Length: 376
Image 1: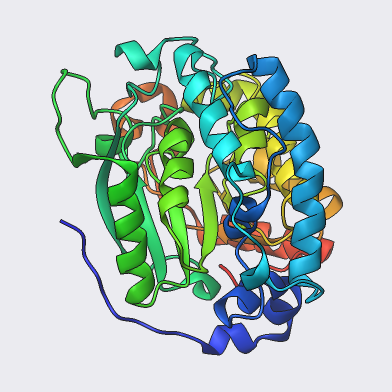
Image 2: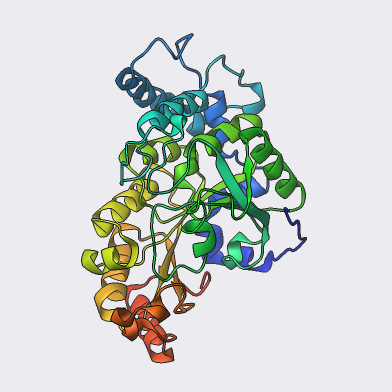
């Protein structure tokens, strides 16, 4: 089921802009720095049992432990403390995150939809997932942005959006619609860890959590990292429609960010995805990832027909002002997939992107000083 393909492309990593802005990413690959999840596994809690506390008390502990994590992380990354000499605690910052995620499953709100279903009792919200994760494929992806390949992609079923133009709609939306497994297989966290190990062994420069959408699978992703031991970049590839709690669970763990930012106008975003308040939520989360995670980020923007002035220009304005060190992949891969070509209300989108539309977007990025050529 899982394909391993050998491929290397290191020339782009010698680009001065890439070397300057992706320093942590490159240093982890070269063994000079440590992936953040490994630091979280070494960050101790000053308590003996997690089940003695309420959820609010656990979040308070999380907030305090984050300060310990940040201090430890800086000491290790700056070479002031040897990672190998740090003792493994009885309960770690990562263990705390796993435990909090398990509680959230009882009233699920990993994403901003906050369905509130009890997934531990097989109740299913918008994403149609219970506690189990389903993976459709895992392989060394050579179609991602040049600095990221080969990328160890792990594709989950289920999604927090219902994009009417989705190219992966069979695994993101249709999976589970008739109460049977249509694609992929159910997998436990320890098996996910083994997949990561296989991808790493075969040359993955990162572990790329994608889908569908990884957000409904936060509990199993975090748990899988308790079994994993390799010093490999963890990459979050997402629509970024996470709840504040969902973001708090992953922002310390991920080393690299690959967020989508497709829409500026909320009404259009809702028509396309069924997601309310798209702009406010996604930009809030991207900004948090940029400010409190690493600043190592490629923002993906899919240019759409007749939407350059309405969406692309204001999105690029925001990127230049709020995430100025991030690269932006200005994507011209729009295809009228899924429901677009069947819905007469969106005939203006039922065509490929014109060359001049894409060029207008790229010219505007150049005007703003946004770096896009290295990743587009």
